[in-house]
Image 1: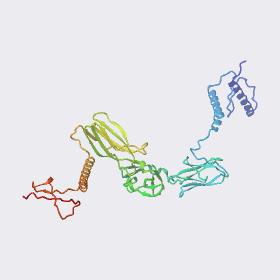
Image 2: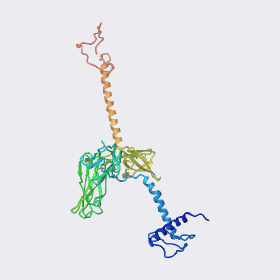
Image 3: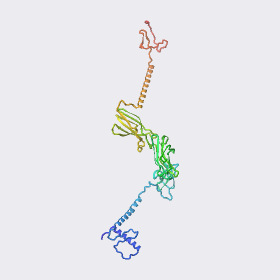
Image 4: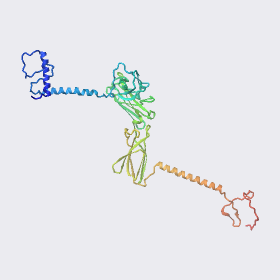
Length: 454
């Protein structure tokens, strides 16, 4: 006798169960049924009775396969998935507790604090903004908020050491249709003195919507309203420009766009950043350039009210050779034996160079450094040489005057007498002799002899 397979055992058990349930439901059969006749279950049964020795139909086999697959998934995958921890950082968890350790979670906007009342023994609490951890609680009773947003934000706290517990609030409460707020708010500093912010009208904004922008210093809370708006065809403000950024704050700044409408409330839109980080530097201004057959020099300057540390990119081409680029931190270029060169330069902030783009290129500078006679010194170098020469000449005169003055004091001139015989002066120099003046040196005269007169 052949050994029964698992399928045959399952078939016989299912058929036996189905037969018993059918007999109870319909009562005794009117006649003796054929032992090898296929029996179909009553409505609602899932067992399929197949005559002994026969193969199951294709549809029954597929149904059994799906049944076994469902049993496998329920028996194995569900228990395993129940052991896997959920990613509870992706959303706040609120665990129901009749006596929670934390109550009355609230926001204190004046003090920029998320605070609560503690009613249990909790050792550590972590605060989250939109499900992202940002701080550990201080004294287990509050967290300082670095920046309160004007948009509805989820603030949650979670016990990280102690009995698990979490709760959350939304602040400020959502008012109006979020799709009516200004979209794609972008701000940048450009052309040294200008700050421009642009945005798009909300996709579901009412027809009479109007937007206004102002800046706010997040440290001092000083505010600056927009000084010049640009509107679209419907008259809705979509751009703002400030003409003098030197009067604005260089600290962290909030750019906030409020909306108004006669029929509904319009939520705000905002972004924040430092002006120095959103500046697009202007093209460098070439201040000096000259060259000859052996040397080329070019100097430039970048103006900015917000940055003073720059890096530069030079694009250089010698004659008809392919152009190449070079990054430098100095604001001048020196080349030996240059020949014919074309150079242009652009700049960006060295502090935030890892993400800030390059500014625009300067105008190309063409150098033809083959004529030695046409070489000219730069104005600043010529002025320096003139000033240095003038200084050297003045110092020479001073030294010369001092030298003769000192010599006369150390070696005064000796008076000479007239030679009456030859009629000439000794050494060609005379000096008035005053016999009445006391001489510094008394010389005794023994004899004076007059030889004659002329």
